[in-house]
Amino acid sequence: MRIAIPLLLSLALPLAASATDAPQSTQHVYTYAVELGADGRLQDLAPYGATSGAAGDALSAEIRDWVFAPDADAGDDRGTRTYLRVVVDEPAQGGYRVVSATTGPALAAMTAPEYPMRDQLAGKEGMVVLRLQVSADGAVRDVDVHAATGNVTRAMAGAAAAASRQWRFAPEQVAGQPVPSMLLWPVCYLGPASAPSTCNWTGPDDQRFSSKTVLPLDPNVSVSYAAR
Image (cartoon, rainbow, N blue to C red):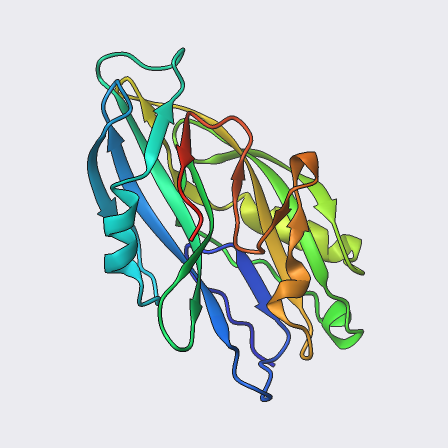
């Protein structure tokens, strides 16, 4: 058995890779460091971390036309630094479609959650959505299980929460100072015959999200973009 865990993504933990049909599209995550002026105008955009997708150049050009709105009560003339996390579908024939775009701190270092062997052998799978309180120094100050789907066990949820306590983040900065954040972060445990889409999850206001979508609960910056 092998566990494939992509760095800087929400975690999809497959029990084993499927040897059946190749996927028609693959989801990738692109993370950018974003510098905004006090008026929300984009001052600088730079890739943060690594990605395996092919849409990076085209996506970077598109993002420069997006609208960013810093929290009016949080900043001053020194502006805001945030991290933009964009989840895209990339079809096998080329091109891309934006699935979600959120701002917040960026994952800088992680410990992979354990997939308890008893649960692997029993075919237990599903989604654990963690609520993370990230302090201004980038450490995870507190964590709890916001939701669980499928037949996730207490041991699986506990393993995800325990691992997340070791994660480190690059925090957002408002008016030149790092600030704390709160996030909903999905961890997906997959069985050998499961499609990643089975780990889509329901967030606030019954919105459906990809297994790679991380949702800030107190965003310092909102972002608007045109769906493709």
